[in-house]
Image (cartoon, rainbow, N blue to C red; front, side, top):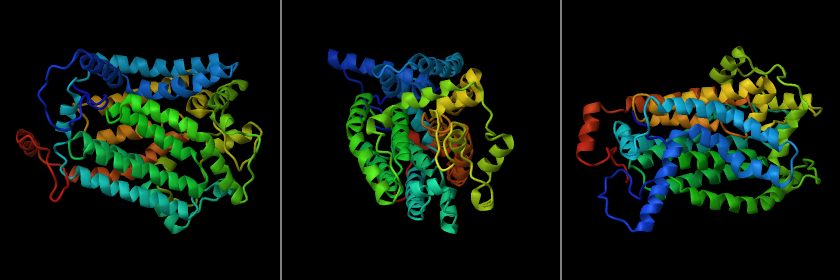
Length: 440
């Protein structure tokens, strides 16, 4: 049983087998270290994604500023890891990751000759829909304050492509790992995705989606082997230094639009995510605020708003803000872990992360290496229910919405899939199957 879905890149070539040559001792040691880290990422992908923001930012900030609830935050992370590590460790009993994961991944993609063109179309549509929605006012800070959804026909149609940013990212990564897209072109497309999100953040004066997208791409890219960890650490440090300027520019945009900005909240205060999470310690949990139930999951998750335009807005963040004494025009969350603790208690934190770790293991391991559809679903799991900054349980509803929105793309991939005989024939020639006119 193999699992090629996550590892550091073992070499510069993609989709080709190269002869191994003796390397100097230093290079051999560096390669062994990369292999070790790669194996850890392949064995515990959900655990790594859950732990990363707390190990890199949140817990260090809590310790540096002597947050009295630092122990509670650490225990909350421990509960989440208890669920994910237990499931992922049990999964290893049924088969360990194949060390030649890239070769297995390439075989899994060989039956999808139109993978790269579909990835390009999905990426371009996602960018167009996002820009259109922002220009129509959807998601702007003014709409968040007023509670307006900008539910015009075009704005509502743009929601049909919700989640296609993560979907496009997954298909581009699959195209690269299958040998259809060079590393340089992959980085170019990812820069376009981030650039579009940055432009949207300027239009909306909201930076949270941009930060969430950057973290998602960095974490998932590391798991899939398209980013080196040392480069990610360098970029993270650079972003931390750039944050004060970004924060001031965001506030300036908001003030120009007549939105009041609290001058007492500094850029450093906004980075104190540990304080945001530790606020949850002041409540007896679990708390019932009328959060989404099974019926709401089905209605909001499976039925597009364009078919159900009269349903009320689903915003658990606003309910939390009102519960803690704020108004209905603003939202507050305790981050993903804090929200799960708030609504479901300790057992909920363990159960939620165990469940999604099991889902991720099924997507990555069932019947061998994942094709583009299963890899896309895995990316959506990381993008919605497991993203540290998302609002639980709304993020679970978002996952269902994004899966429904991705169904046309999955159907197109399934219809364009080659027969197994044709895929083996393409592999025997030593080339990746290409669509007519596809530029390598």
